[in-house]
Image 1 (tube, helix red, strand yellow):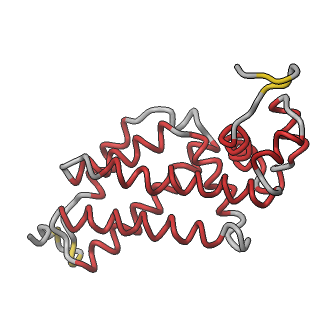
Image 2: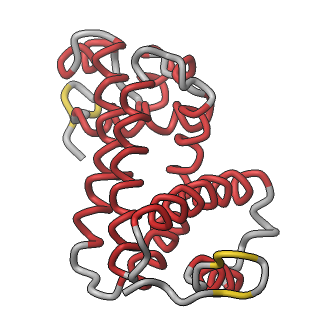
Length: 199
């Protein structure tokens, strides 16, 4: 670990990651420079070497969350050929990064914040675009793709919240297959029975 005069030399990413952890724990209000400096064993001078001010740090943390929670996932999904497997990959990603659910919950509670709102809007739009394409690749028509994309997104968000609140209940992944079966079931036009997806 690099040090100078006994002080750890932190990178911009170190500060950004610390800010993301703080957001997940207590929202934007939890991102305090002095508190993070103590946590990281650094000085305020280290902070100002990398950031102009606290808002600059918040912007960097939100940008990283957007990159990892949207852009990086979309890039990874392009490597998965089977549409149904892409849906499973999304859930696998949610399982692999529990902090993401904490950050998402904190940001959702602050959806009206001028710094948070545009990030949430972009992430939601990107996710729905990806999901609509997955269901289109499965053969559903445009309206059904839109409905199923929104339903899946709500389930994804709800799963993150439920796992965050009661991790022991949602520790296993067995129910995910049942969920996939439900989401991929043929479209029902009425109560008399299912209809096959349109090719």
